[in-house]
Every structure is written in C-alpha cells, then in structure tokens.
Length: 304
Image (cartoon, rainbow, N blue to C red; front, side, top):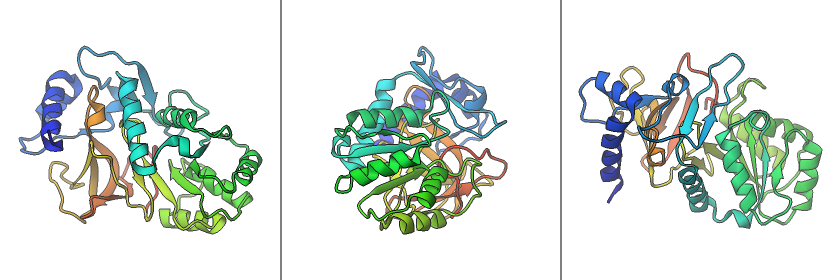
C-alpha cells in the first residue's frame, strides 16, 4: 500500500472516530483535497480518537502567558518507533554517537515530547558521556574537549547554542550541531542564516543541522544543511494559500505548512501548522516564519 492509499484510509478513520476532527471537517467547504485541522485546536480540545486513552500528555513550550497545546498520545510505542526510525534513516544508529542535549526551558518543565525523544536517544547511545547539560556550559565544553575524535551530536535550543558559542567557541569541524526551538523570547530574533553563520564560525563546522518538530506531531523532519528539511516516508508536507487554506499551492510558492503525519494515527494526522514555508522539487521544504498573530513557540521560529 502506497502513502496516498494509507493516508486516505487514515483520513476516513479519523473523520469518523475523532470528534474534534469530524466536527471541523463537517464545517469546511466541500473539497476533493484533505482538510487540515488548525494546530490551535490542541489548545482547547482533547484531540484523540474514540475508544483510546492517553498513555502520555505532551505539552508545548510556549512563552509566558500563552496557552500551551496538549497532545494526548495513545501509544508511546508508536511515538518511539517514529522518532527512532526517522533518526536512523537520517543519521544511523544512536549508538554510533555521543549525544549531548542543551535544552534549557524544555528540561525545566514537565511533559516535553522533545525531552522524551532526546532521553531515549541518549539511552541508546553507547557513550557514557551522553546526556543533558542544562545550563552548565563549562561541563559541556569539557565533555566536547574529551570527545575530540568521537562522533558527537549536540542538540540544542537555538538561543542556548548561541549563548554557548559566545563563551566557549572552539574548532571541532566534525561536530554535528542541531538547532531547534528558536529563541523562545530569550534573545532577539535573528534569521536562521545569521544563526547558522554564527555557529559555523564558532565551531568551524561546514553545516548546521536543524530539527523540525512540534508537540502536536509524533514525527520530525531534519535539515542537514541550508535549512532544507526532509521528512521520513510516512510524513508529507503540503503548502496551502495563507488567505485560503483549502487551496494547495504549487512548488516554490510561500504559504501555510500543513503536515500529514501518519504516526498520529490515534490523534489527528492532518495538521495545519502556524508556520509559513514552501516546498521544493526535491521534496524538501523550508520554514520561512510564523503566521501573523500566532504564538511564538515550538520549533523553527526564525525568519530566513
């Protein structure tokens, strides 16, 4: 069964068994295309299919005063299968790396899907130095020095990576720096190109990697260079008109990013994000910013 056949089956299932999605689809204008549930529904509704109970409830990061999203996840096994398979597709086995995480803000609250994912990857890493570094830049620097000739992934929220780079820049061209999460109100917003230029200059790396994910999705996309994200095969991105979200745009046109994530089988697989972006002919997509009046939270909040 190909992706489209499976997506149609999931769409029909969720239109019947997910009360929130069913109600929204019933109000949408008639269309031969998929209807995508706006991500804001996760702030006010329990988006889960009938007959299923949540094994975990993940909450979005948000900034102070903003209403967080909650994702009622019926199967943590599905989530783990999704993020581990995707990681292996893009990077190989977690055991091949020392995995270091610089995620202040995420670690300081409960129920972060990013922390859950990162913890599992750290557990699967064969290196005893793998782990979280909350705000201890000196410790992180010492570990990186010890790992001079080892394969290392440093996953960090963007503002923290920049803070670290300003204090402990050193030459490690084989380091995989993966940024996610934007500035989250901690620093002045700058473009992704400016962020990547600063990190390249600080550590001597050729490319800076990026992770695109959100609380409401159980899958991630990865950009290994130039901010061009690729999805695993069970995920598809569709870009629609910002003024008419039921109209699909051609390649290269900027609009709303919509995600079909088949790992969201028990919640909703058809999500309209609050991100603007465009698709490319090679299947990659770029994130170009946020819709006006949308919450500045989650991943990839910087304008190019």
